[in-house]
Length: 304
Image (cartoon, rainbow, N blue to C red):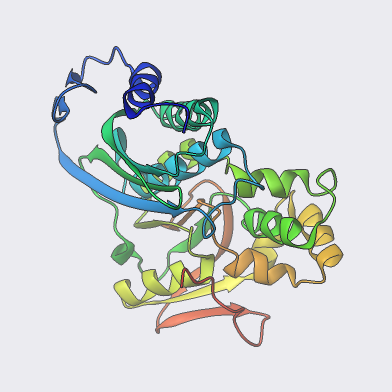
C-alpha cells in the first residue's frame, strides 16, 4: 500500500465537500450534523460486495460508485421521499491505486448530485474484498407504500427493464461491447429515471424493481391483498423492445427472463391512474401475479 488512511480520508473529504446549507458539521468530526427537514424521515441501506455485485475487471471505479449510490436513491424515490444525505462505509484491500479510490468517490458524489443529495460521512476499513455499504436519508410528507394497490388500478413501469441483465449476460458470455453497449452500460452504471419516479408520486403504490418485476409485483400484490395481471403487449410497446429482443436472441435467452426477472434495473413499478411510463397491466381481485400469455413465470432474480 503506497498511501495512508489519512491520505485516503483527505481525498474523500475533498471530493465530498459541499456548500449545502443543510450540513452543519460534515466530514472531519465524530459524526455529521445536518438540518432536519419537515415531514417524515425515510432511511434505506444497500450493500455491494466485490465478486458478488461488481468486478473490477468489468467496471470502472466511477461506474461502481454510481451504481451503489443509485441503488439507494431509487429506494428513497420509490417511497415518495426526496433524497437528502448519505453516509458510506467502505472497505478497501489496500492494493487499489489512490486514483482508483478517487474515481470511486467521484462516481458516488456525482450520482448523489443528480437528485441534490450529499454524502456527509462514513467509515473506512481494510479488508480482503472491496465492500460498499451506503445508508441514505430522505424526507417525505406522504410515504408511498407497496400496500396501496387497489383493484381497478393500472400497472405502470418507468421504462423497459432487462438491459442490466442483458449487460451482465454479455460480460459473462464475452459478447461484443460495441453490440451490447447499451446493455453493458446499464449493468455497470444504471441510468435511473429519477424524474419519472418522482412523477409517479401520484401513485397508489410504488416500488423499485431492483429484484425483478415479478418478484417486486408479488410483494406489492401480497401487501395489498390483490392480484397483478401483466400484459406482454405493454412491454412490447416500448421503443427499446426490438433492441433488447435482438440481444436476447444473440445470447439464446428468453427476452421475458430479462424483462420480468432480470433484476438490478432500478426502475419503478407503480399502480394508479394516468401515470407516466409504460402501462403494462391491471390490478384485479385475487392474489399473486400472472403474466397473460406466459404459461409460467420466469425464474426469479435471487441475491443468494
